[in-house]
Image (cartoon, rainbow, N blue to C red; front, side, top):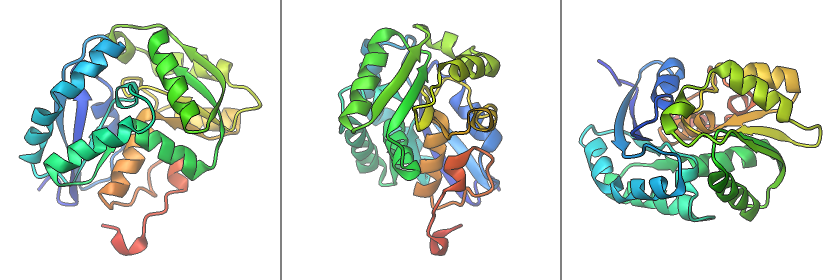
Length: 245
């Protein structure tokens, strides 16, 4: 029987080709993953706003699978209206589904708090308008951006085609000595296979959109993630031992 330990629901942009595959490769045994897609072809502010218009239907479809927790797997799409928008998304999902939910932007803030960081280097594949939205959002939460670089990729499928080695090299060259953490932003950018190498080479924690989302989602589902090799964030996981499945 699949999902005997729990069923995870994912809401992903329709052109995202990375999030599901990374979760499948790393998710703890006994969990199953079930997805619904939200329309998005271009990684733009306009495109991301349209995703929320279809959110109700997508959540209802996931609810039919009786999932135990749901993630809204889009970084800038869950912070597009600034601080608090991520909570609005989560509340909407939970109201419909009656199960815990997490938006990627909320998971990132939660991860930064867990790691007790304040100064951030940010690497993204985004165009400038999305970088500006994200920078403003992080600053609203009190974080200082030391360096930030985007690749200017508008087509979301193009983001999914980035090779991990490209992300590794670009991000490594961006990082400064002054930052507390490197943040790799975008759920369609592959990061799971390079996190441990970046942490070792840079001697600082690395947070990625997919990593933070999985970390937070497993906590919502009350499933231990201590055995996952996904960097410092997972080593610091503090699930109440009485609730572990």
